[in-house]
View 1 (cartoon, rainbow, N blue to C red):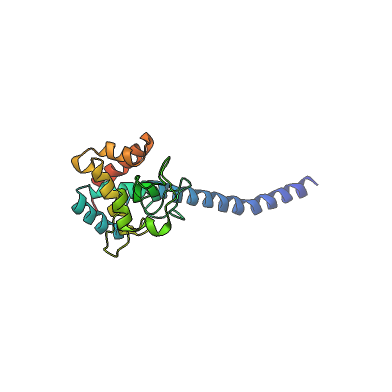
View 2 (view 1 turned 135 degrees about the vertical axis):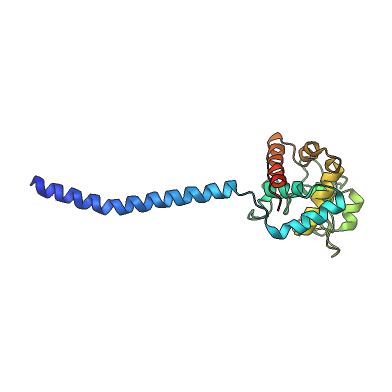
Length: 196
């Protein structure tokens, strides 16, 4: 009787060992892949020429633009490119920052009630003092267009001191959070030390 119970226990144990091993393997693989995502500081190659062109135009270090892009949308990997607060596009502009705070509907956090056709109109943006830029010359300044978004961020950061070396001031102006400043500065230092 005891021998039969022992045999059953051994069979169960032999059956469970592969399941346990597989589960452990999956846990390790999943844990490693998460670690790789967190530690991965490489910049997608396709964005680098745009950052460098914006640096040339506005004098803002291209690595700073890459750091903002990484922190804002993980290099445009965020699902909708629209935040819960209403920030839009690759570099997460609030509509009132993109179009201009002088727009009659702009107040508070800057979501505004700007008609869609006006949100990307360079003339409207110029009228209301916004930071939206038509970088590719297609007649539209669109925060969902990668070139326009990066050039708009460069213009914004330049106007807030980044081109003169006031990086932390410019970053804080972009998003009023000390943690945000720390995050962007962290990636900025990573990108400067790992030249691509």
